Image (tube, rainbow, N blue to C red; front, side):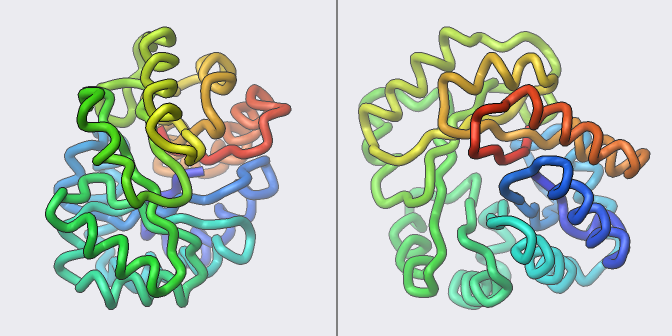
Length: 246
């Protein structure tokens, strides 16, 4: 389950995390709000902007991670700019101390890969890697080298929140390319907008990532979020590793 930290006051946010965990989320991905979330669509961008207006973004994210980690394994999703601004060493230490098992930097610059992986490894964090669908075969080995935890294979080339059809054969071919290059599990997200699509993607990967449908619910009517989570969890059964972000 992807949840953007700071969307609601802390008490409400903890309650939502509790409800979503009970509804079937096996893992939390907590998003650190960023003003230029260019890989995300309008729903998640709006959630981030709302969180930024509340202020104290890092502190709120750490508190969300602490609570989420008591419920389910928790990974932080962020962009490189906040990592650079806060300091890779400091941010990795803070998230590790908060209980995160990993941090995925979705736009990790090539020249910062070795540094980030070393910093994260030193504090016991895993470093999942998002691999663009446009990556050429010759570039995949370098893209996955040193990653840990899993590889993230977008189900769509569009930003998060895409609600159109998915090219399932193309996704299957891409996940096979990743499996050839790395023994890490492969997860997929982005554009998995309905339980039916989640069920179609699930046989291709080791985890399905859902987010925008639930974030939309959290932003407009938080009471919808548990039912939405349950619908996706039921569609993915009997798959046992479910992360949600789309």
